[in-house]
Length: 358
Image 1: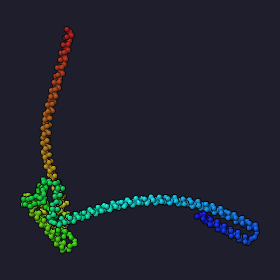
Image 2 (image 1 turned 90 degrees about the vertical axis):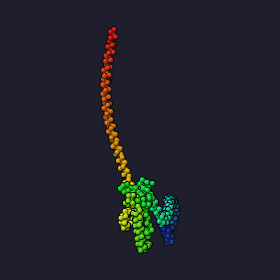
Image 3 (image 1 turned 180 degrees about the vertical axis):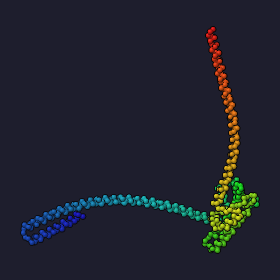
Image 4 (image 1 turned 120 degrees about the vertical axis):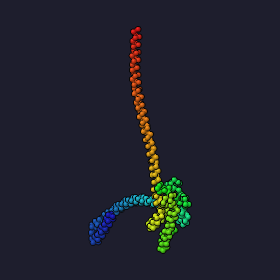
């Protein structure tokens, strides 16, 4: 930029001098002055030529250096841009791969949801039938009993047990005294419960369903109380198993009259959770009773062992006294033996002296 300004100023100065020389030539006719001005003009033209040549060389060199620097910077910038592009491309590839992986997981989850929806629809179709619904409740009850007490543990529970009155209970638990045998029967009042909880129905329809639901529950309670509570054979109470936590929660939260009715009939309403807790408590009581029974047996055995140990101590003391007596006798015999040995030594010496005298 500085070179360009200098060149422009120099050109302007030269043009001014040439104009002045021409003006002087026109006004003066003196030959000397004309010659001097011509010489001055020649020198200026020569110096201007030299200056232009040097200026051109410098400009070329500067442009060459500038071009080299620009090329170098461009190469550096190109390398950085390529590096950034590669890095961003790698990140984009990883992000894209992660997105594809998540999409595949979402697709798998969607398939599972579709399968679960099909299973739920299938379960709903099963639960609409009373017989299959009853089987569903019995299967859940069997699973809970086997989970708590173990499979086919007839010492504690029996399935489909027939009572003396001919009624068959879903399960009979042999609880410890004073509780005794407890009958458990599975009931699943679903239709009127669903209508009662269906918000799309009118209030009158839901109120009617509520009355019918309560009637269903009371009928089940009456049946359990009359069939599965037998004096002298079972305890004076029975368990009603609802295989749906939602129905159990609804009864406990909003239908206290049903709970009071069941209480008066000696029927306790349970859900999968509460039944498992109750049976676990019964199982712990049975285990504690068994431990106490074995503890009594162990106490008796320990008492017998104590008697045997007393006899052993007496016999050992007697043996010890006998050993002490024998030991004393051995010492006395040892002393006598020493004395006899010394006497024999003395006798031997006497015989030896007499033989020498002879």
